[in-house]
Image (cartoon, rainbow over all chains, first blue to last red; front, side):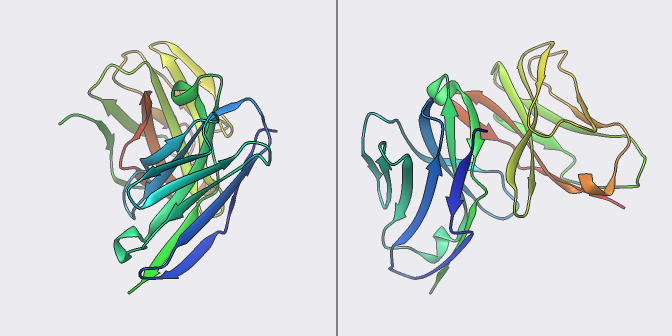
Length: 114
Length: 109
C-alpha cells in the first residue's frame, strides 16, 4: 500500500532552535514531495516542495532535504519562531508531479516556545 | 474573492440525517478533492473528481456521495450521517499544486 510515514507526531522547540520533521515513503514512483503548513481553523497551505532530481531545496528559513536511496525526506525550520507553531504535513505524489494525486503523512504538531 | 469557499464552516446534525457540504472554486481547475481530517489519521481522501461528471473513490468513500455537474462546484453528501463521520472536512482543487478551503467542522450527535 502506498504510504507516507511522518515523525514525530508532535515537537516542541525553543525559539531560535531548529525544527526537524521526517518522512519516509515506500513507492519509488513518487515524483513530487510537498510540505504543507496548517494553522488552527485553516486549511493546509503549500509551504515548500521538492522533486527527486535534487537533494535539497531552501526557501528562507525552510529547507527540504531529500535522500532518494533511503526513500526519506525531511523539513528543517531554521531559527524557529512562535509564529511557526502549526501542524505540518508531508506528502508525496505519483504519476504527475505537482499535478498528481497526493498521499499525506499524518502530520506533526509543532510548538515553538518563546 | 478568488479561491475555494466551503460552506457551512460549522454544522451540527443528528445521526441518520442527510447533510451536504458545499465547495466552490472561482478558478476552472479540473481536479477537485474532498478530504477528512481526524486526529491521528491526518488527511484522508474521500472522493475526487477529474472534471465535471467524472468522480472517483478515494481511501474512505463509504457513507459519502459526491456529484459534479459544474466544474466550479463539488458538493459532498452524507446520506445518513453517523457519529464516526464527525470530522473536519476539507475541499481542495488542483492546478499546479493543491489549494485547500478553510474546512467544515461537522459534528454528528
